[in-house]
Amino acid sequence: MSLPPSPPLLPDEKVFGDKITILSEVLMGPLRDRTTVVVHLDDALPWVVQEAIMALEAVQETPHVTLSLGVNQPAPPFIHGGSFVLHLLLFLTDPTKLLQSLWPNWRPRYLLLFSLASSNSVATILNHEVFSKVSKLALMTELPNEVLGRPRTMGVYTFQPFSSSKPKFLGEWNPLHYKQRSWLFTDRFPSFDGYQFEVASWMNDPPFLYQRTSSSVVSRRGVMIHAVATLASALNFTYTLALRPPDMKWGSLVKGRWNGLLGQIFRGEKNFTISTLFVNAQRQQDFDASVSFITSGFGAFLQNPRPLPEWLNVQRPFQPFVWAAVTATLATAVWIMTVQTHLRLEPLKLLSSYSNTCTALLERVCGQPFVGGGVSTWLYLQRGMFGQGVPTIPQAMWQRMFIGVWYLYCLLVSIYYTSNLIAIFTNPAYPQHIHTLQQLADSDYRLAKLDNGDLLLLTLRESRDDIYQKLERKLDVFPEDDDAVASMLDGTHAFVHGAINGYIRLGVRYKVFNFYEVGERMLPGYLSWYFPKYVPWKYKFDQGIQAVLEAGLFEHWLKVEMDDLLGRRGDQHLMGEQTTMVLTLQHLQGLFYILILAWVASVAVFLLELLRPRCSHR
Image 1 (cartoon, rainbow, N blue to C red):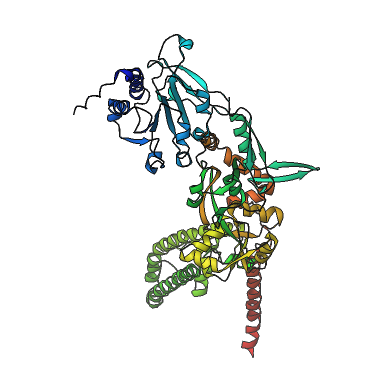
Image 2 (image 1 turned 45 degrees about the vertical axis):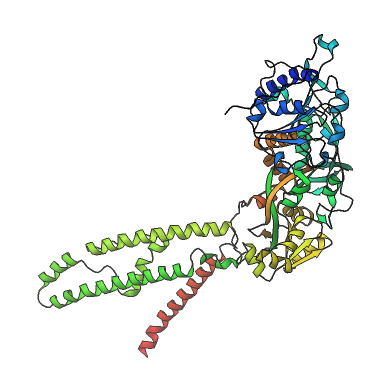
């Protein structure tokens, strides 16, 4: 399909010809990988020039949208996205005044300013606030004759706001020198050049952000302190931190206004926040979240109930059904041995009155009984359960095979029992814990939560989920953590807090370790830093955070802070590890109870044996 020929330029318009040719070189050269072109045309351009620009092959072969700078309407929302959406602004007069109305909703990532005028004030254009939120910015304009001595030579400029107040000259346009997009759109933020950022923070979020006083010296600690210090060193900036937000809130939308840390950012009082906040759709509408560096949620913490009595440790390795099966197996084995022995004695007794030779022959073939009645058989077979050997081996082949199979069975039962018993000794047993939010909602526990304006309170009130609605009806909001923790220790409430922070709050401040967290967390999500909407330099922080995350430093810093705050015990509590436990007599009391019971039974049998002859003589 052939394109329509470009309309001829009028004699007084031929001065645009060379610049339109350069524009075609730019679009077909370093910007050839564009997916969409949004062409912004200055109304001051002659219509013939506008037609010539739109007829370029580089424009026609790419999906494009044409907007007039003279029309007071925001750009369509779809043109802001895409892998590489190029915004091309062609102007003859100063475009900044025309862009004022478009600026609040206009956030192009790649913007090429192409001047068709003979001269422009580069500094006035690039320093304007309408371009302050553009990530990649380049200006092509005609260089003065005294610069290179050649007429109508185009130069390339950009502006690095943190490095200098003057535009940066990248060089004369030459297709051989600008073969890639990155050579034309250079990094506007290679360094922040010592710029001081005002950071919104709340020093009440251990282990992420907190203060510690030692020998009258106040130091700021936490995972986020390590992270922002690392990025400050790499990106060359300084920062100031705040002790707390004025209203003591994290940040939520109340009656159309943001409060807390996010409110400070929204009003422009702070540049960004390093306090860990959850990512959700409502916040994403008015702010930009950084790369997420950790997943967490809100945990429900319950006091551990009293452990089961230690003397029950002996029976806990097996469930009641297993104990019944083992007992039934032993009884069956005793019955089989007793019946088989009785059946083999009957022919011996019958033939012994006829022939001693036949009796001896049957004894050699059938074997002599090696145990007596049922009690003797039981005492013989139960040795295998306790890992004891047998005093004699039966002569009959069937009995030997039966004893071999029986001892193999006893070996397996003994191994399973011993292994489970060791695990029980090293892990105290409690009554059934609550593992899911459904179980928590159906239980008699209520929820205790501090009113600090975080995301959970708003979500529970507005959620349509059945479980969250049940939890919201059971929620009690307290003005202080002391009251919330006290209700947990009373056994009536579950203390609700940030999952990781909850361990610190209970362990460091209240010295409480006898608790557990419900296995399922509320509002599981990602934690991030928050920036104002459409900040062009946020990607530098994203790259830095991603590099720190891939190096494993966040995980390392979290472990260091947990060890420092709670010690090895707290770190194991957080990670679900078990400490080494030394066995004591208290753990083995069940065995001593059985031993005492056996002694009592033995003494009773012994006394019966002593008294029985005397009673029979009478």
